[in-house]
Image 1 (spheres, rainbow, N blue to C red):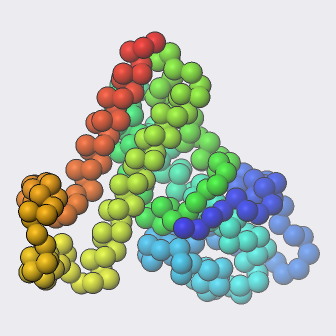
Image 2: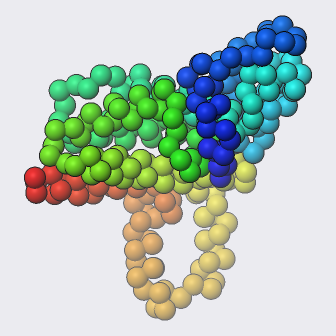
Length: 253
């Protein structure tokens, strides 16, 4: 995980909202902050990992010196926060304006848009925001999502908590999906191939009479998913239970 929000908040907000003034002295500016952010997103999407993303690599991709990049973005942390805000803009466009759907369909749409975002830009799952992102797209996304649960009789804190619940579920399952995909790339084996190698060795040491529940349930789940874990099933199953819980809360109002 990479933590952000550690830099100068006033400077970061100025960068995110496009009000930061570039230095007037020194070499002529050949780029914009938006170009730097877009280049960083492209690199992170290609690597699907933030560990390899550096200011130097971003500068090289743009054909400029590393030090000149700090003219536009003051730090790697600030760059990550700007990248996050940029891709949140995609969610804002996909969510669109509040429609006529009921709150449950609205939350399903919120979940789907965030799920797609995580799979399209898996590096966002590696960004830990200890404090709320304060960019224009981040706030616009929050506004659109809140509109889904507006008018249900929930308190403002409960509205925020419902969205947090949806986000936590989506990000948790998406993280497992991304990790599973990464394991396939790293090992060169899909789940079926991996079990073909692991199964015989496990059978030699596993006693189903000692672990009857693990044997029965594990076999049933494995046969149902053709794998030890099915992220798509976990996503749908968990979201359905989550919506049932929200429905129970709404009925009390």
